[in-house]
Length: 613
Image 1 (cartoon, rainbow, N blue to C red):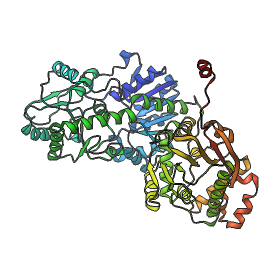
Image 2 (image 1 turned 90 degrees about the vertical axis):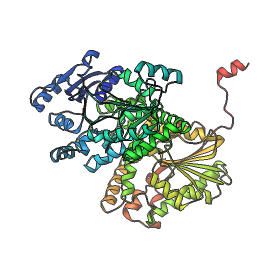
Image 3 (image 1 turned 30 degrees about the vertical axis):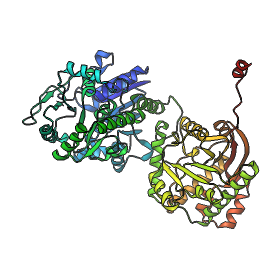
Image 4 (image 1 turned 60 degrees about the vertical axis):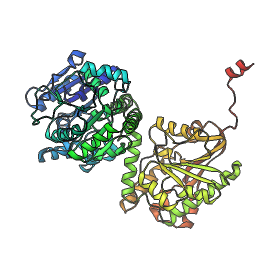
């Protein structure tokens, strides 16, 4: 692919993104402006062409777009994305960085509203910023969270001997080192940091504070406490050395959006003191992964002293922080997702309109948040829907009986459990244990409130929190069809198979491909129901019987088409008799029900049999 990056070309974000895509074999160019106070861009030295704005933005950008003929254009900062779209950039990815939203002028706010509605994909590095973009009008299906990612091989904890050597090389003393690598502009509260350090140093006089500011110009932050070192731009490897040598990292700005520097510090196993902002609570837990405080000198000083005085706390924070980054913020994972977005928008792999499939978990969460906000998460009391649900329960019990699968005394896991209604009924029908995994926190809370006997947890079904072979029966009721990414769908099915005991069974009940006229009629009826105040309907990808067999490689005991298309009674407000009559028509049966048994004993492969002989 040919990728054109637009924005401040001398910032680490743009530089590292360009290098990451070039490493993956893509032709990358960058264009934009130089951020004042930072060193010139190093991209040209690395073989990536850079074009700086000359004259009025729009004519310059049109010339650049004509010359590069990029497969995808990625603009950083929303004003740059607005200019790119006006110049004709398509397909366009628009990335908000935070300040371009939080501190936008009135004119820029108008531009932001315009561009987030028109870009093919709108990105942010935190869910909090993504939600603000949606308030500006970014469609849920075209907005996503993508972090910058951290190279966890380079940013890694240092052993005690290595840390001592790093400190000697950097000229740091043996006492505790507090590191701050954020900008020293007022937004980032540098005076709070220095005042907090001064208080902490009264108790620990050997402590040192390293303030790394951005750029070559020395900012005026007032008088500095003793044992404070103020440094400017350093090469990236040297910056990594400071992280790995530090005992604590401080980031307490007034506003922020998932800063890369925090994740880099956490990857190095540095205990962090962070200001209490919305982005923090998306992944970070206070007291487990970091210390979260008000951005005030007293609160920050107390947190620093807790880290310095309690080696056990410091070690726990360091270990949890490192694990969090490895699991959720690795550079390789985030760049895989970004590359997938580019590929789909550029037409290099099949996809659907709207949000690229590479962020399907985020897309699903956004779609169901929107649906639940419109009342779609609450159990329906419409007679037609209740008839559908009662028929489903009967179909499940009938299929289990035919398959010879015993429900009484079984441990059951429902993947995509929602508010727990069907799982609760399985327990009422005889299951001994009902566990469920659900992506949406509000639905988890509802399930726990309505059915306190169930074990419903919040989680991603592609990473189930259970040991192998834990459950006798694993179920999914229209969960897989809500996943549009085939790779993610396979991962969820593999996890269901993993936690199923040998000899246990999977129940899969999901939408099946319908004949074109029936599918079209269902679409029309769903839209009519939505316009008349009914629930929102989320995007789905039906599963054929062959795909279900491929996802669960066991003995298929039951496989049949069942259930009336629920859109019909819901949209027509049909009562039970009409619903049952319609359900008797085979073409209107919209779902596929399968029961698949996992072999009790895995057969040896040919090579294993030969070696055993």
